[in-house]
Image (tube, rainbow, N blue to C red; front, side, top):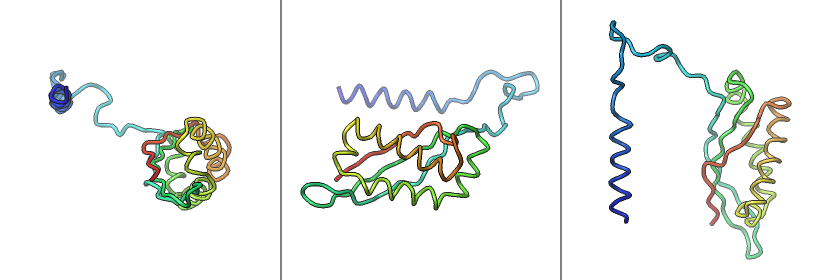
Length: 137
């Protein structure tokens, strides 16, 4: 079963790396290619923080991606990276390991982070937050 997964992964990698085969007569690719795609997603550097636990302190590593309401806010988020990181660290360190590992706790943490980051960037700047990595040890 592992072999089949490895073969499927290799096949997918090969497909993704194939260059486009459709080009117009001047050799240019389809319209819009070559332009920088604007995105409203901003990936923050991973956070490694202490969280409390009944058995003492534990470490949590979180990867967070912000989904902003406008691509123009990406530059503002990058400029205020220090403030955003402080807000996230303050919020996450107030949680327990159980809060971070339970689905209900993660949803509540997302809502709190959205509110706190919106206080830094402006009302309704952050539409959603995605956890790209969650490790508690």
